[in-house]
Length: 249
Image (cartoon, rainbow, N blue to C red; front, side, top):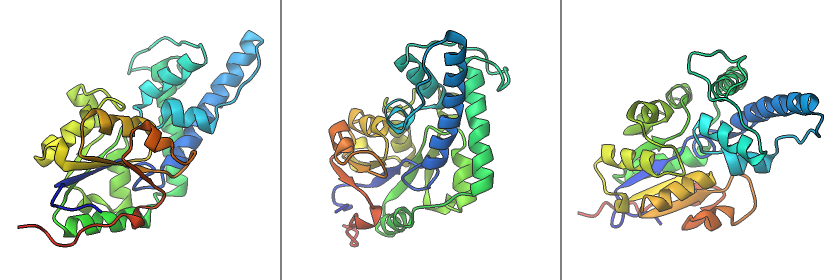
């Protein structure tokens, strides 16, 4: 049970925790990397090994876009030039692949729209009714647009996303800096805040930031994987998370 006796704030990841956009991201990453890996195999004469769900969870999920590209390519023994932010999506660079992936994501989002997890929205409403301050903390540079499209702006007191992290020079998850910045904006100490995450990198960030409690939200992957990554508890549905209604004086 989450209680104001122990906690003052709740920090939510967005994709896969509040909105059903994690699958859209996964599809965009798969489209990007499978095309790149096929081309590389054809040029090198080596075998084509497709991008897998395990690759997504281990190397990409929860990380800033360019970090995810570097991390996955390194796992396959591949490197690309960094490139520059001015390059287009056709460039065979880390920056170019990042723009290409974002284009795939926005294309799929426009086609599918933004769906939310009813249990997450219900938990946000119960937390706020109990006096909790709330923030959304996401590596995505599309966070603000997704939150607005889902009509969830009124449920968050603060937002720290990929755009803000870039502006402030904050490293992405699994570093705890974006969560710590959200706690600072809510004027709470990390020990008085709960982190809710579906990605191993995000769970690790919550633990490294010494937050009071970390809830792993298992939407995919093997049972217990988020606890092994450092979560205090793992749940499949946020509707099961209890909130103490009374606000202590």
